[in-house]
Length: 390
Ligand code: APR
Ligand code: PHB
Image 1 (tube, rainbow, N blue to C red):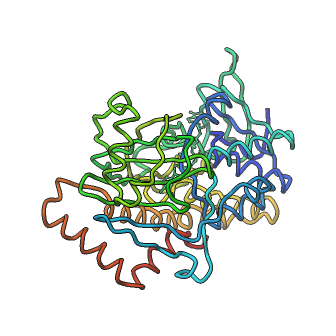
Image 2 (image 1 turned 30 degrees about the vertical axis):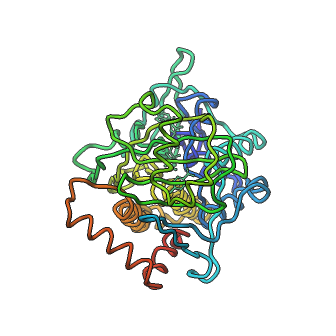
């Protein structure tokens, strides 16, 4: 098989790039190691920045988003029983975010790819990039016991944190920056009325909690948990009880509880691999960087990479100009690091870090007090939350 752009990974990054390129007449093949059902079974954050919404419109997959996505103009921060609102719209001069599940974004992308006859090969095993630094790069993969090969101009690694792309770059050509946080997030999904129309990020002496939602009848809640915990340690009753204890009384009092329909634990990590290009292999999304979920920057950072990469590839195919491709890594990383800083800051602000001691706790408290009192601090939070420009 032969294509122009070979994409490894059929998550949101890979599918979005494939869709955008196809609309401009550039051929792609997407190789995804899992089944479609498996990919669509993963539950992830659901806050979309303006840039991501714009890309979805450009990719022609925004119809359902326009109908079902909820525009959020603010969110709450709770600390020590107090609740205060961050009015993003007022603080940014009119910006907001859209709450729409990442799983739904992926579903919309698959439907669009199907409609356009896009090639997405599922259960493609042992995907391997070859001749990355030569002039005839290609991918091999195994499907149903047969090995196949795809010749391409460029290979795009959209295969997430555990994928093969980043590992295909020689270790001495990559610099890794990493912070692993000493806790995780336990998340549940439940068919209950969300406790609030806006998200609530709560800091408490018992640890962080987040009240989020997917729709008027579907709630998504999280509590900071120990890395040693398993979901078996957290029957629903314990979860609801702990969540209530971390929320201001007034909020806890009106929390509707019910059976969980999904429950999982995710570790928190900040991670960046530099550079995001090696020869004809380009990394994008989780393959190159991970953020802790506080602030919901994961998908939005991936979207920014896809924006830069799409523009650069179009410059190449349309104008024969490779300057965009040469600049991709630096350009993408400049924005990646800003999202890293924000996610790290928001994580540090709201979680319990016992090892930071009394001084660390006072710093955290003072940071919250400052935020509550300073419009300048709130503007900084709001402009990052709605998303910095591409
Ligand atoms: N070969 C083929 N496909 C692979 C391989 C491999 N060796 N390894 C992983 N994949 C697939 C995974 O099964 C997954 O479907 O690559 C896809 C990567 O998707 P994501 O992990 O969703 O990453 P990305 O598309 O960059 O999306 C970024 O997803 O993880 C969240 O927080 C993250 O919101 C962010 C967004
Ligand atoms: C979610 O709804 O899953 C969500 C929302 C905001 C975050 C993280 C996760 O910061």
